[in-house]
Amino acid sequence: MRVGFVGLGLMGLAMARNVIKGGHSVSGYDLQGPALEALAEAGGSAAPTPAAVGERSQIVVVMVPNDADVREAVLGEHGISAGLAAGDMVLVMSTISPGCTIEVGARVQGRGQRYLEAPVTRSTQHAVDGELGILAGGSAEDLGTAREVLELMGSDITHCGPVGTGAAMKLVNNMLAGSISACVQEAMVLGAKAGLTQETMQGVLRGTAADCAGLRTIERNVAAGRVFRPGFKVALQHKDMRLATTWASEIGAITPMGSTTHQLLGLAMAAGYADLDSGASLRVFEQAAGTQLS
Image (tube, one colour):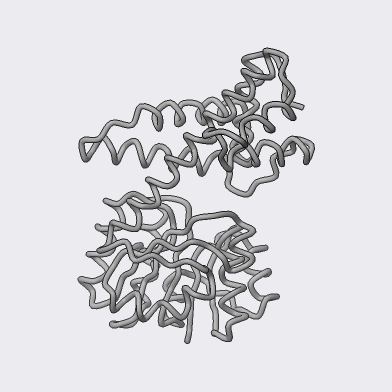
């Protein structure tokens, strides 16, 4: 199958490499030259525009950061849809708002092309290993067409329902994960301020209802020297929390925990941590308390 990629960042490039390893012909577009060079080194080919990717592909994966980028990549003057043949597919795997994916999907389908959303969960390492979680929204037929490619990128594929439900599930996941992480950071710094060691807190909390992945994340980050090498950047988590809380307001739900976490990530952004891993928001709590986990 001829597969295209628009967006070759940390996640997109790893995903494209796995599709190439699966024996498919891959072309790609990215704003950054080094990303295109890396794609070529992996056996893919660079295209000059998203439209050119569309011309060369039967399925085009979109992995760009936000709503505006997806609209431009798919529907812009030189967007994917301008080059894609009728009956071929746009496969949006970015984390965007449900409203945006529904809008873009309807316009793509109105041009006689197919549309599937499939945002992903888990980390960049899971992308490298081809073990992402994939949250599909669209028709069962379109998911069936894309499944061969999706299975090269992910180990768990969930059909959430029609277009829009994949984005909704992704925002629910990211809001919950981000809020849990913030609560863990807050509690651990409180304990450190009171004189508790991380070893003591980890030992107790892992044997109670408070046990969660966030405890292990803090332990890894501290053990690694607190460099917070980016896997999922603060800037992206901040964007996702904004999407989740805005969407909640639009549909009549309240998100007090999500809104507070969004504010925390805003403080981390203001402190200069935008390009660090989202775990770097720990520093905001530490600086406020005048202490540090060790």
